Amino acid sequence: MVVSPVPNTARILDYWLGGFHHYPVDVEAAKVFESLYPNFPMVFRTLRDYISRVTRYIESQGIEQFVVFGSGLPTCGNVHEAVPQAKVLYTDIDAANIELGQKILRDNPHADYIFCDATNLDTLDRSVIDRVLGTIQRLGMVFVGVSAFIPDDTLAQMLDQLYDWAPAGSFLALDFDGEALAQYQRVLELLNSMGAPLHMRNPTTIRPLLGRWQLTQPGIVPVSAWQADALEKPAQGREQVFMYGCVVYK
Image 1 (spheres, one colour):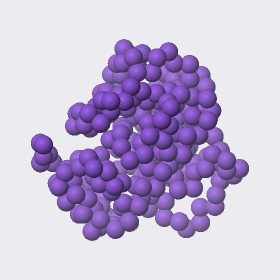
Image 2 (cartoon, rainbow, N blue to C red):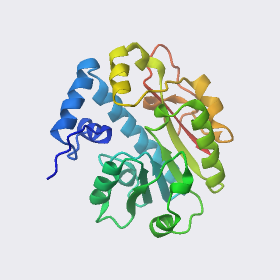
Image 3 (cartoon, rainbow, N blue to C red):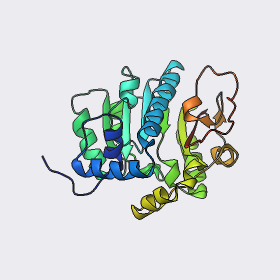
Image 4 (spheres, rainbow, N blue to C red):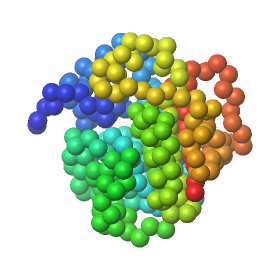
């Protein structure tokens, strides 16, 4: 086994989610984050539960083909496990994630993992889409854990490009880092030192970024509160919101 000398965010999340695809260096980094905010594991377990709910909702709309952007590792309830009958193409820009993800999925005929820079859809190999997903009628897309690292102008342009690229009737699930993390300055400093400055947002600043995409109910809410059958937005109150989520459609 080759042990990575550098911690990897996806493997840290795998550790927090109870997976098996991480190294001691990732555990050490996870412990540093936990020393600054002990509830980090629960925050990301809540986010993974959100991925499961939104993908099952999208599947319930008759969609059986998914593309996942900035996927991390395909473990611990990620998309192909949440909707096992669907065809799923995971993508990322991190070579380590892609290599490990391909190993994890090598015996799964309905899922694969390839390179794609979500800011440039031309990097998505159409031949692989055809091989893994087949002819696309409508598409489910998952864009979770990505937007926090993208400034507003680039993100708005990216979501607009996704709108043009996706067939009519497609759905897109997103998350956005909330502003609660701003009070944990040492966490932000640690993330910045890893080259990952965060863009924190709230529903008012998120809505314009969605452009032509149409919001489904319950709109933009904390990921812990997102439910497909909710008739209205839950009251926000004074809850610390680390991540907002929404599902939009074309």
